[in-house]
Amino acid sequence: MNGDQERLLYQDKQLKIVMRFAPQAPAVALVGEVDATNSAALARTLAGLRESGCRLDVDTGELTFVDLSGMRVLALPALPAAERWIRLLNVTPFQQRMLRMMGWFYEPHPADRP
Image (tube, rainbow, N blue to C red; front, side, top):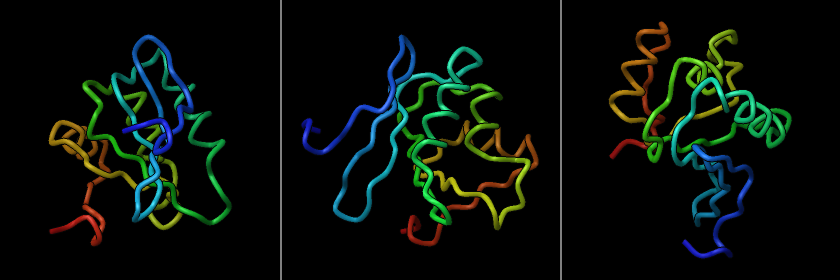
């Protein structure tokens, strides 16, 4: 994508967080790896984007690794399902398995299904 279609929100040696502006809706894309060294930065970045009452779409399809600390940031396990404000897109089979192990069963959003 060119610079007009995405905006860099955060970057370290392992992780890049970008806002991608797509025709259907903007989404935050995570590229690289999330672990204990950068999961707090991920949480701060996502919290800074949160608008009251709005869900934030987060594309995890380009993550090559995510540990439990990162999944906790993304899954918001302490909140009841109705109060979770992050919607995960392009969840990989490995990420789905981690979510199930956490007791948080991933189900694709109806708009994401073929």
